[in-house]
Length: 129
Image (cartoon, rainbow, N blue to C red; front, side, top):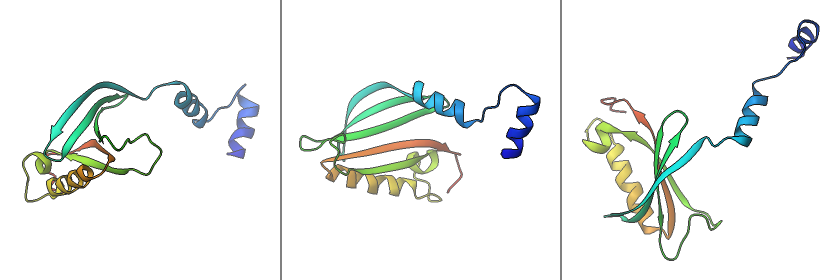
């Protein structure tokens, strides 16, 4: 980097790195926006689900808040981040254990006073991973 800075001082009037604009955007822009909230009763307990829209893709998440717990309390909270998997989660493919992982996680979250569950990304259909 020092050589690049020396070169820039001779050839151009200013020099910035990618870190500067990135830091500026993170401080001033909302990268993810909550667009919907609803109560969702499930066999694991009642969840408050939130729909989020990001710059590059949709995110979906849910947080269970029981009468004796709150995910924003500052206390440690159980968190599960789950990779969305069409073949495993929806069709229970035997090539993928995503449905089993999801079931175990939601059962455990249902036992907590406060916990958070988030689904991120999309795995390719039929990936079986």
